[in-house]
Image 1 (cartoon, rainbow, N blue to C red):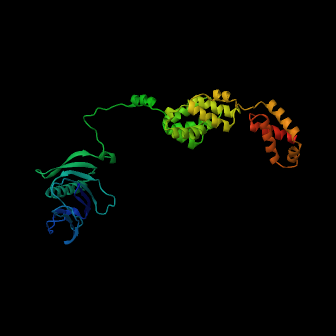
Image 2 (cartoon, rainbow, N blue to C red; image 1 turned 60 degrees about the horizontal axis):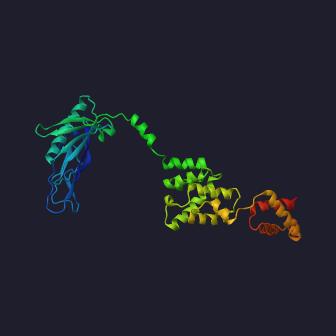
Image 3 (cartoon, rainbow, N blue to C red; image 1 turned 60 degrees about the vertical axis):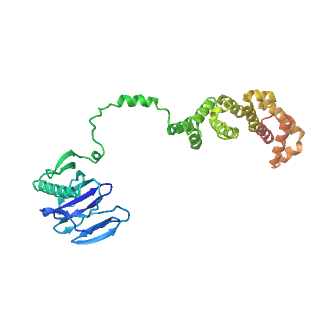
Length: 367
């Protein structure tokens, strides 16, 4: 039976790869190629014909060697001084399409050693196949004095090419260690983002901004504990608070407004005690002085009037005093409602809750 072989020779400065067919009388021998000083020359032989290709800047000397089978030669080799190389060899019957087991010969340090090791190993593999033996992936060494290869280790799987047991390392059981370490791992940003979205109903974008800054996330959670609408807390943190910190050259850890104080401010707005516009004024004083929102609101006397009965009384007075705008609204002029709303707020000296005033006025005028 005739056999063909797949060969590969590699090192940092040396590479050979190709096929040699019909290896029943296979031999490896040097090719008589021109050698010269200067840039290295890479040469390829085929049936005795040499084709030289100049590779600039690759060294001062080069020698080429080829493998030759009954039908000719398909391999070329370029070598420079000081190289070591490995050879991968795979032999299979000529009519078999599947590649044979790849066997590696390690640390060959001369062209003569490559030639002799390849010749020996290919003949050894062919002889083994003809005896009906099965070849397996393995690494072999080369005994130059004996002129033969020897087994170093087998490689049954692909990962065996990278990992093998180290005799100096004892086995370590990690089950207990991993369980203990997992308990000490803090909440990671991905999990924190998902929790913020689910627990506080904030947008994925806002959750990502908060979760990517551990200190900012801690501030938010402290401020959102008692908030009716955590989303409003996020808006104040990511807009007004971050802007004020940036202008003041501060970080969230230097913030003069404690998270609980910001929560108090947001709740005053959500409960209708102060308007959003008033909230921004109060926030500015809080950031400048560190005082609480409730103290500032009380001092300035700007707490909104949200008592329903008091607002209804004010609305009744405005409706009675402005018959024409009332008639215009009932005739379809919706803009008249804004005039009446302004009159109620003016009558309350700016304290009436604008939203509540609008709702009461519209209900009364449509009834």
